[in-house]
Image (cartoon, rainbow, N blue to C red; front, top):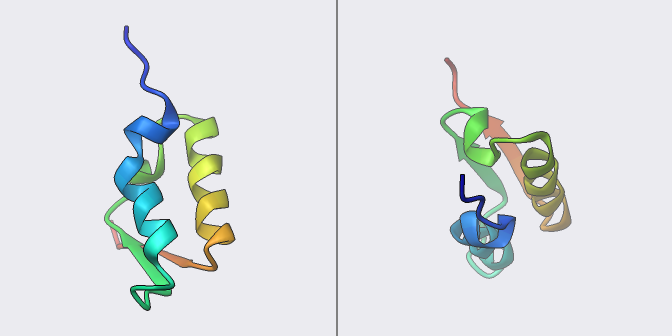
Length: 62
């Protein structure tokens, strides 16, 4: 099994977090929590990046 590094797998997510202030984005809406990561480590890294960018997280209803 080939495992991608977080930075490669979540490149668009990282770019979104980095550009949030410039784009006047303050909230991220995800369809389901799995989009933030497949493992505990990926999930905590994504949540940390959201926090570092000052973004709020909302998860859509099931």
